[in-house]
Image (cartoon, rainbow, N blue to C red; front, side, top):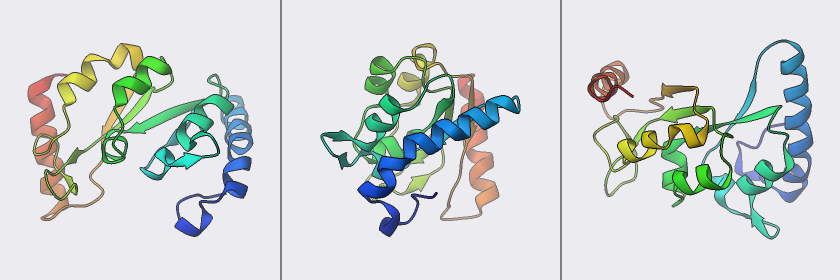
Length: 159
């Protein structure tokens, strides 16, 4: 089951999603690996009487389903990752690190945008962070140069 296309983002799909995620988590746990769900901005839209992301956090087993928080998408949705870390401590073992360009809100190299990574990384223990990854989905220039630029910026931070 996917929820990546807008026409797939329906209550019918969302209702089944926690069960699918838990079952996937059971299978990966049996195989000795951790399963995690990666967010985009649409998970922060209303679903029933809550947000879809909150519904997924409430309806999935933390021992089976980790959350791979994409810091760009949560910020683009107008959400504060720190508030989610406070409400669901330990649920975010993985992060995708990418930045948001001022004005356009496009993806940009880490350190060139508006996301306050110092503040977010300061809360890594509350979040339950184990691993983080630079993700450069797109670039206005050479994507490999963008990744290198992000890497150099993050090296100065020593997160």
